[in-house]
Image (cartoon, rainbow, N blue to C red):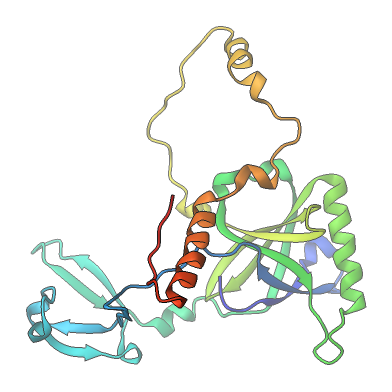
Length: 266
């Protein structure tokens, strides 16, 4: 999403039923952390990434192949396409300002409707998840009481009726849709960005077949595996990251004692 993390959550006129606009000032923070990040290098030094132009636009295999080093500030945006008549690969320059003018960034997040939680399927969700909290006063660092009241009402309403809130907003000059939902485990609201229906693919293959008494077989195969407690934290631990981070810690300690750093994973 965009770097903007502060929004004004507003009712639409149709929902509010009046011309009065109720606003809840909210802030977003990512609710999941990134994986362990590595960098590339050689001889114990980090390799710097640069943009270059090469002679004849062929891949560079050495310094002599570089025509010009291009700074990041000089980069332009192009759309690559194949000429239908000649079959030649071409580039057409894109006016980024024109693209950005399609949607102007705004701190307004409108509530479109309240929906059943069952109407949202996992494939509709992107990988962008956020904690939603009330904004703090810059001077006192405390929460705005009026916003806290609205936030609390939203939370308990969504919990009690098992509903989600569908919202729409502009970020990075793109229109985005998201669901706001209560998370009792963290004690507050969360938000997940949805994938536009425009980009959902149709299923090409149909793998289902007709089986008599299909549920009877399902009960035998899967019934014993039904868990009473749902998913807990221990079910989804990434052991790869745990091993990598443990190995890095050991390697740093070994390097500090003159043994040389080397990652080993069991």
